[in-house]
Image (cartoon, rainbow, N blue to C red; front, side):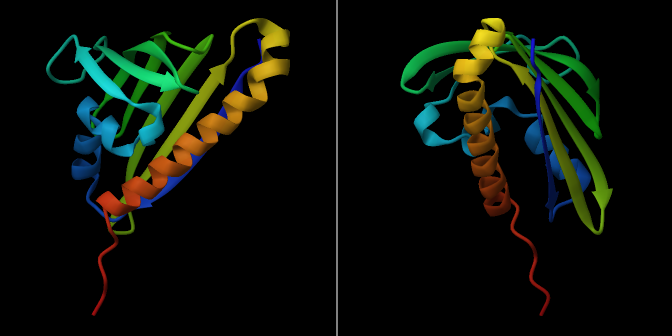
Length: 155
């Protein structure tokens, strides 16, 4: 199984606690997900995120509707949480969200490790497409985060 890894650091002009709090709300995923994915939060097993919380979503991948279930694997507020896909389009998906107070704001790092189904053949035929899609999703996400947390202007 070939695992792809994407690293996305982003500095956010907001305090650590505010940024972490935003990303702890699964309903905020809709605000930072490309509209063509038709993201919809279906529910979560606990009102507040914690280790073991299950989150169910529905989305469209290239127009095909599918369900996705994630579990919070690790929970260390306000600096880190990790979610893993239990059900969805990938053979393996692990998303590490880390947060660090820095330069009057927050340095957020997304690290996504994923593998496509069907082994080497799957990677040959759809691995490049999955990589492109994940890059595009995180490009959009970075743009939306910049709009939601605009840098303060110095007069």
